Amino acid sequence: MKAMVLSQPRTPLVWTELPDREPGPGEVRVKVLACGVCRTDLHVFDGDLPDSKSPIIPGHEVVGRIDAMGAGVSGLSLGERVGVPWLGHTCGVCPYCRAQRENLCDAPLFTGYTRDGGFATAVIADARFAFPLGETGSDVPLAPLLCAGLIGWRSLKIAGEAQRLGLYGFGAAGHIVAQVAKWQGREVYAFTRPGDRDKQAFARSLGVTWAGGSDETPPQPLDAAIIYATVGDLVPTALRAVRKGGRVVCAGIHMSDIPSFPYSLLWEERALVSVANLTRQDGIDFLSQVPKMGIEVKTTTYPLQRANEALADLRAGRFDGAAVLIP
Ligand SMILES: [Zn+2]
Ligand SMILES: [Zn+2]
Image (cartoon, rainbow, N blue to C red; front, side, top):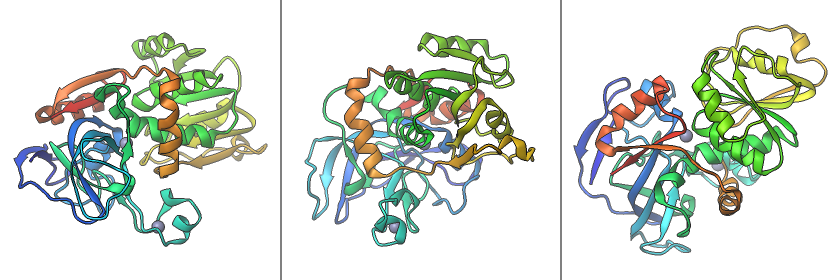
């Protein structure tokens, strides 16, 4: 197999030939067809996250086909198309796992962070955490759904019944969640970097109710806001934009420090929460409804060998939607 390997943080990924790996008991080997590039891959690259496997093959939005199965795998078959998401393994016995909160497991493994991921021609996955994807839809637009879509779905669930929903950051997750929220009958208010007219036009093309800069006040107070951008300054900004009893959800795995803010922004039962990872149930709930939602995922594709360029373009905001690597 071949892979783009990160040997040390902040050094370019290196195209590397590796021995083929065999799936162990309970595992499957997935021949990668497409792998999305997520903001979290940049955090892995930058060394922002603690205790990363090193060297590591990043990538946790994997679409592929099973080409080998270890002992004891049930419910999946050779040749089946599956998705390999961020949540790669949980312990099953800790208090969080037992309380159906496996997203908070005490001893988890995460694809492309603490176990090797999909910036490769093949990936080994714990079979219980691979989602059957069926044959509807092509591989490339499915890939970003495995994280941007899934974490987006979970953050939307945690935002609650909000009719007027603000989205801060309109990248891969934002543009998918905007469409899901619209499908659910909500009004979406999209916030981009101040002055980013192109991104605001992109948001309007997806049918949002309003689009503007994060320095602008929305025309109506929001019922809830989700922050996808990694900028801590947006927390007080979003609290300011939500009504009494409103909710602000931080959906990123990493964020710059949140500046101090007056208690009055939180007063009147506003709530500030974060979303971590996903549960398998989130994946099943979301992926089973995707065919009904009519989401158009905007993608820019790169050959796998050009993963460094994809990461650089993501960092610089050079494309709308999501980047996807093709082996
Ligand atoms: Zn656990
Ligand atoms: Zn991700």
